[in-house]
Image (cartoon, rainbow, N blue to C red; front, side, top):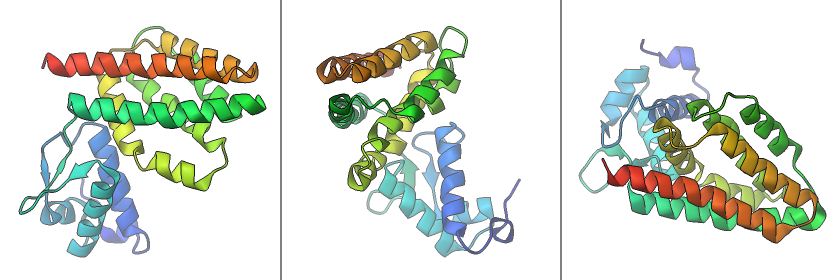
Length: 219
């Protein structure tokens, strides 16, 4: 059903369109390589062309869309090189966060709460783990109370979510195993063992990276 600009509200219409496009991309409704023209987005949401253009530009900036010269914006393709870079960027930022938190023995309540949600799920792979899993990892960064570190992490967050959705859509990781590794990280932080927490994180992210790269290689 078409959403009208009046329904979205004049104020914040660009953010509203951006949010809905992001949801459709991450949910797999708009597939990799599919072009998104200003005209198509304008018609899809019943908004003016300038609003559609601004929404597309926001998603290009966040890494969900890519645009080359003389071509429409398209949903980025997830290839092995992208996966490796995204996961290794996460490892650098999150391992530093864990070491800092462990030095203070500060276990983020938001991370524990997100992991409890995963733990409550049934055993086996489940795409529903993506949201609490991402909230767990984001909580580690937010617990540093650093606006700039948070901004840096969020600059790759859409690509992180896209990769995580790809992992769980392919049923590659078990929810119980994810929760157990998260719990081990938090236990190491509580014990002041930053190096151990970082090593668990590296193994945790590396496992997802390797499995997704292997899956992409067989398609």
